[in-house]
Structure formats: structure tokens, C-alpha cells
Image 1 (cartoon, rainbow, N blue to C red):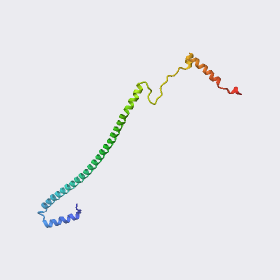
Image 2 (cartoon, rainbow, N blue to C red; image 1 turned 30 degrees about the vertical axis):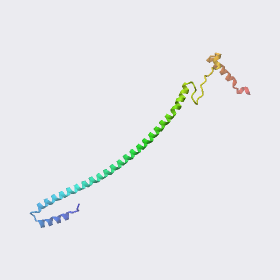
Image 3 (cartoon, rainbow, N blue to C red; image 1 turned 90 degrees about the horizontal axis):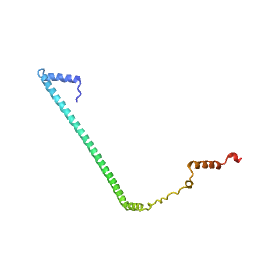
Length: 158
């Protein structure tokens, strides 16, 4: 608090000894010590009260910030939920609108008609080789020999 050096304290002690006298000086010094102790405790209590108030103000401002962010988040979530609900309702309406068309298409398929947009399936005719009764090994040999005879040789041309 106050900046007293040793020389200033010595001067105060000498003046107190002269003014108060040697008989009452110890009692006055004890009383002054008690008063200074009380003053220091009072100052420290005031400091701690001020610190608590400052921390309380900081906590209040922090609480307000958190509440503001929470309300912003809540509003954002509600708007997103509203958008999603609108999309779900729109999709549900589209599905409801398409149900008669799907039922009609399903009735055509079950009735024997080909589905809309698809060509009817025609069974494949058996190949002529299968009718001749040639086996798998015999069919490979003539094909190999015919492919060899079809390819011209370089030596034959010259």
C-alpha cells in the first residue's frame, strides 16, 4: 500500500517514543498492529468481493453467449426440420399421385401384357448345328482346319 523505507520507520518510531513515552509505547504499538491487521483483512475482503463480482459478470456474459448460441442452434434445427418435413410431405404426395399409375402398370403385367416401355420376349430358335447332331469335338476340328485354309500364306503368294 504505502512505500515506507527503513529510515522512515525509524523516524516514526523515534517521534512516537518522544510523544507517547516509553511506558505506553508497547501498548499503543500492539493496538496499532491490531488495527493494521483489521485494515489488511478488510482490504483483502473488499478485493475478493470485487474479484467475485468481476467473475460473476464474466460468467453472466458467458451464460448469455451460450444461451444465445443455443437459441440460434435451436432455431436453425427447427428450420432444417421444417424443410425436411416439407420435402417428406412433397415426396409422399408424389408417391400418392403415382399409385394409380403403378397399379395400372402392375395390372398390365399380371394380365399378360408386356410392361410399358419394354419389348416382348421372344424365345430363341434352335441353331442348325444342334439339329445336325454334330458333337462338340467334331465341330471344333473342321472349324480349325477351315480357318487355317482360309488364311493365305506369304510363301504361297510369291
